[in-house]
Length: 370
Image (cartoon, rainbow, N blue to C red; front, side, top):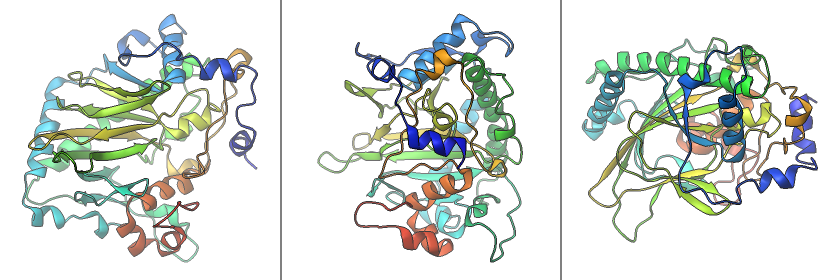
């Protein structure tokens, strides 16, 4: 059994667990702001690093400024995203996600599932542009996640803008990950092998159409993200909410700032010291559209397992162990965990390309291990 799997079995027996869990007794009225530029180089632990670790442990969400991405690049990507969703439905359907065993492409409103309920959004999923892994009878199913994207011929500039964004945001995410490691008194390079190429990062461009009063407002249902870090750009229409001990906290837009949240794989690597938190998006009102761009910084499939960091004792005592929701079991094996999330969300792709995993899904009641 891996050290991470052992951590999953032992979970939060620390005498300080109650203190950690109650650290949000004072209600939050807004997310904190982290300036990446203030974290300096990766060789020196500073009070800014200690604040970063505390915020990530307590709520797992914050705004990120000082990332260095030019506003012009952000504006260009936001503009081309709107152009894509304005294309005729038949054009978008030509690159529908059910054509791709790699879970890349367009999904219409209601086509993705969260907690067994359809999400009222349309989206297009991208990943690192890679050659697919040859499939044989002995190839693990999760290798199907690696492969090329689908691109709309009618919007050729989308490809260059998306690939540039994947490169740019990867650099920001890696800097932030290294800042977290310094904050936890680890070498800044401690997880380099976990995020080495070939990369396994994903990008999702999303449109939430307005919903009439009285209809479902599940833009996306309550969930945690499965990777290491998520960096989200959102437009000026609100709707994102994060769960706190006092209830749902609105996360209003902050121009050119990312909303960052911890993923389950980073929670695993820190034995639960860092927190992957539950969040959701409520649909805008009728006649209003919301757009967002979510980048998921994730472990490489080639890394196989998530390592367990050896935290110093004063931090390890505050690590409560990673949570493993029985409705969404957590695996330390990277490919298994990543495929689980994909097949649960996209039943059409699972049924066509992953019949064994699809057969394990209970699609009408409580989900199974998949």
